[in-house]
Image 1: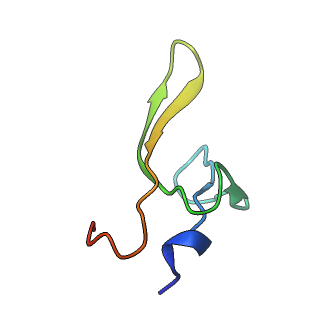
Image 2 (image 1 turned 60 degrees about the vertical axis):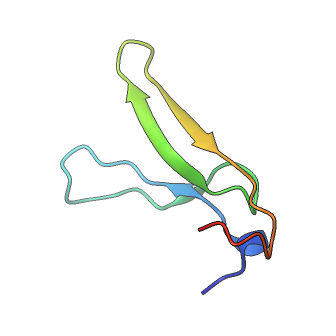
Length: 59
């Protein structure tokens, strides 16, 4: 399992749920996204991320 500092969020897209684009890195390394929501009206995604200090015991 990667260390928190090496985690990297990524995104892929699909028009049919079967064929997916190549993953693209998003955000900064060490800041994994917890949740991403798609806003169809704005054609944009919004995500939440939080840095967790190593050894903090947070999961």
